[in-house]
Image (cartoon, rainbow, N blue to C red; front, side, top):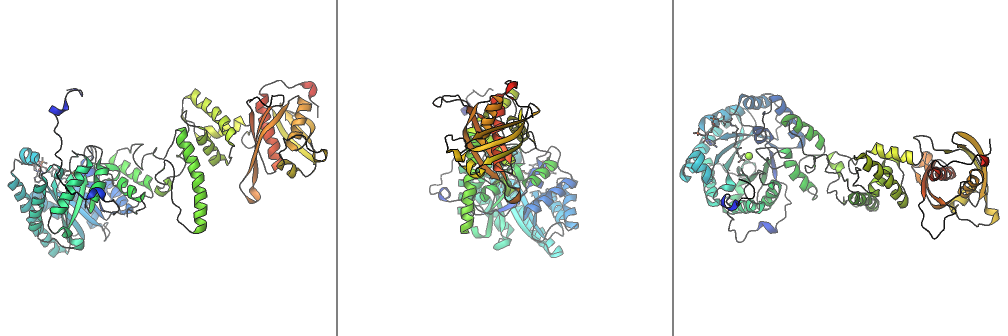
Length: 607
Ligand SMILES: CC(=O)SCCNC(=O)CCNC(=O)[C@H](O)C(C)(C)COP(=O)(O)OP(=O)(O)OC[C@H]1O[C@@H](n2cnc3c(N)ncnc32)[C@H](O)[C@@H]1OP(=O)(O)O
Ligand SMILES: CC(C)C(=O)C(=O)O
Ligand SMILES: [Mg+2]
């Protein structure tokens, strides 16, 4: 049947819960739940090739590093691998004293007994038993009535309770019980409560504190929007007796793509605990992603009590063990989640970094916290072990801001706005022509080529070899905007220098009201290059002995009508000396202005 067929005669909608005075919508999710990783069970059972013992061991170690205190390590009755892995962790003393391992079993006597054998001798164990409770499973899978479904749960809970006593006596083990009415979210809410009440009574050990039993309420298949799951959880929390003696746990799957929302809303509805997998592995569309949930709390200023400060290590291990990639757009973990390609995003991020640096400086001085508040970046990449390298990447969708950010970050050069526009066109041309992303290398190389910086030394048709500025103290002169003509005669400067012109050394000299106008005068006199400066900007790079000056110059034709807007040519100069930087910037711009124009021989003085 094609998608255009009428779905109303094929699919039934979920039945909303009539919870007239629901409380959760006005609550805020700000409490850190107990986390249980089920990567080694629900995650493992959903792999084409389940993990080997070696892979499970590596994964287990990573879960400990992340700080999980409850880890569902296996379904021991399923396979020798799971049974052996469980025994191995216990016998090799690999389970820290503050960690509870959890094991899953169906409500079947042989499998429950086998499960206990697997965990014999462990210090802290959660025995997790499940049976499906919804109408479809009762009717189709088990062919059981409600009463029979309840009786199955009660009978096997009693067996678990009996074995828990035996194993406590024999090994001194602390055992908690978790019961899952599998398919809870498709089960009649009052029946879910009824069966859990019966299980609680059968268990007979519901206590306070750590000993509370756990009711895990799975959205085995996510069949309704997240608000409905929250309603179901609130209903359960309000109707189950001795609420304080039980832990209410969530186990959301992601069939509708809303497992994260379901978990967060259901936490506001009263849940204490969440089961899930790192990066959301698991049956079909996966279990709820615990890293995502934890980092969502983190970005609200709440420490999630899980450590994802080295998210790449988690990605590597999950990849290795599950043989599943993490999508490039996966929240927090994808390789593109901190990257802006688009111009307006890049511009906002560049401005955001600059504003934040200023804000942080002021806050630091006042001893106040350095709050993260950045356009487009909800979390500081550094907090999860990433860096800012990926934040701005350039392609044909990028603008001047992003390119300027990369030039500033990688070359330390803070281009003036108009020069950013000019250099942006250079990069746009390359990117459009080559129809590919521009790497940082591409951009810095293009910058060096465009402004004749030639790596460590200058290149271009005209290269400054040596110079002397005479007249008044030149630092003052350069401060006085050397391109302003008409200064008093006693402020004029004289430029004496040698430049290489197309590889041949020439001596040139000229006068001006500053070093830059003096060199331009020399170029006019000797090479018939008649340009004037429209814009000049400078800044220092670094500090102390290693400080350098960076100068940026825009030149235009001297003959240009001042009222007429003319395209200029930009240049950059770097030198330990500010006058040197300015002169080099002029030559860099002049090189761009002359292009391959023939220079007049008769104007050149042979050195
Ligand atoms: C939603 C979840 O994720 S639940 C967890 C699912 N995980 C797994 O299934 C992984 C591990 N499972 C396995 O390896 C196997 O299923 C085993 C070893 C546990 C059992 O294998 P088998 O004995 O061959 O049974 P199989 O799985 O084919 O069939 C299930 C049987 O158990 C019954 N059953 C299923 N779930 C349960 C349960 N929770 N409690 C009691 N009985 C159950 C079924 O109705 C069926 O009974 P039937 O044979 O009378 O029709
Ligand atoms: C065993 C249960 C908790 C389960 O995995 C599910 O219902 O999804
Ligand atoms: Mg599951």
